[in-house]
Image (cartoon, rainbow, N blue to C red; front, side, top):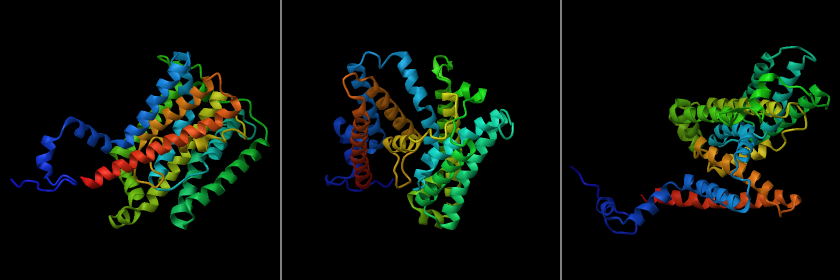
Length: 351
């Protein structure tokens, strides 16, 4: 049998001879460098949990942990969709406005101000959100408008429609199903229903990305679009479908938020865009496409949720400074991710 005689960089000896003779610390370092994309956000998350557990008395209480799950539920659903788009090396800036519009339509159809669809209004609202995402995808893929500009325009359109439909006034009613899914007091085995629903969306998204042909095409499109096209991948269709998925999840996120608040407000949901993208990137998914996934997104969501909740529990920090402090900590976490990803890539190139 032929022996692998490749030279291990910096050692002058063959890989076959060095792997067996490696010390445990060398093997641990090699493993850590190879898995830095997951280890960096996990380290950040564990550090935050330990810190907030030590400096506050309420962080690890069951009620507070339930609050964290409830708070990140709508963000988690939107983050699942934006993960598809970022893996394609695209962006969707319209998710917050689409979420608000879908929530308004669901409440509007429930109230019956124009047309009374009852519970079916939820399905119609979800289809409207998916259609908006598909329109984004078609214009980006087949017309050639950059996703940044197209979704920025759609952000304005969706916001304008939200204000037009409601005439700028909140709708103080929500479908019973949405109030059950989004309500903070609704739990199964002590876990908020909204958290279980968000986890189901994340699980389905992970299965699609990890075990389907479409998921492989998403990674190929973001990793090297020209190579993917030469391999027979219809990258335009992949991008359009990813943006449609993002629109759908944004709409579901908005409807969950309506159920949680029991009202639809045209001025609500403005921070969803920043929260969702920050969570995805914090988890290690690249903004340049092809690297990351739902597991990374889940880690990023937990980091974002723990940080937001923990800062609110700190007693000696001014409420006016907490937002700035949150941004500073997020930048530090992102820097850690960048360093970790560079280590991972260096390790891959040297093997």
